[in-house]
Picture 1 (cartoon, rainbow, N blue to C red):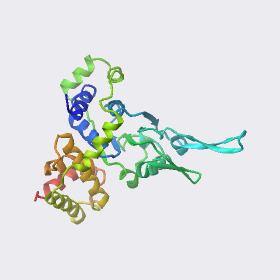
Picture 2 (cartoon, rainbow, N blue to C red; picture 1 turned 60 degrees about the vertical axis):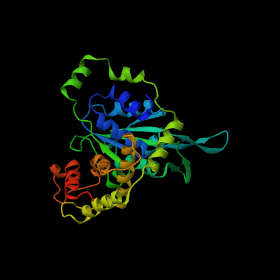
Picture 3 (cartoon, rainbow, N blue to C red; picture 1 turned 180 degrees about the vertical axis):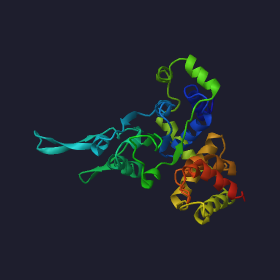
Picture 4 (cartoon, rainbow, N blue to C red; picture 1 turned 90 degrees about the horizontal axis):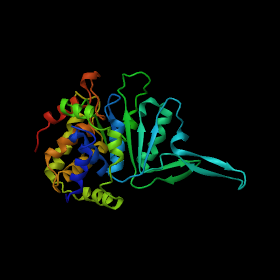
Length: 305
């Protein structure tokens, strides 16, 4: 198989069964140099998907288990006094990895959650007034339990906005679940996987995302989506310019995954729920009118130029 992206999707589909669309969205997120939030019930494969992406993309990987007693220093590291040298030296934390899994991020306090803000936005951390660059590429994949579960702290909007996409896995279909029940252990299969890309190939593909052509008509469509979100009474507040950039980057990565260097309206629509669903809030403030439902309303309300 000549196309490494097709191979990535096929190999990932051998571990995460029946979820090709979610796999493609996750890969598009990382190709667009974004961070990914996976929100779903425990036990549906969120952590497995994160580990799988690290293996297939050839990235070094660290998992941080977020709990209520987690401290910022447990994430970014801290300065330790060296008696022999008479000075402090910085000991890096697990955030100094190419792919960091923030597992169950909403079980930690807001203080611990905020330790990732600078890392996700600036690709660096600052300790005692000194900044330390993070490795490149650098991705955060966070998993999150539904907010109604016991012991969760909702992510603030500033933290949510750092994630390029939010996706859900959901329950498997009947055929996929039967294969899961009767087949080999997914984690054992995962450990036997080999990387489909090296670091140079990954960076080359990320560069190709920027080369995907965007016509003026597509830009008009993106701007119309943003404008409608700001003017419609359905939404509590509209999408920001950063959300517009995120939508465009995600759509370009989706087009590249489809083997095209020309952006189509279908590419924008394909990534829109994952890209803007966590950034939109209903003015009615009802649980049934959030995320995907608001994204669907946006697509239905704005015609393609």
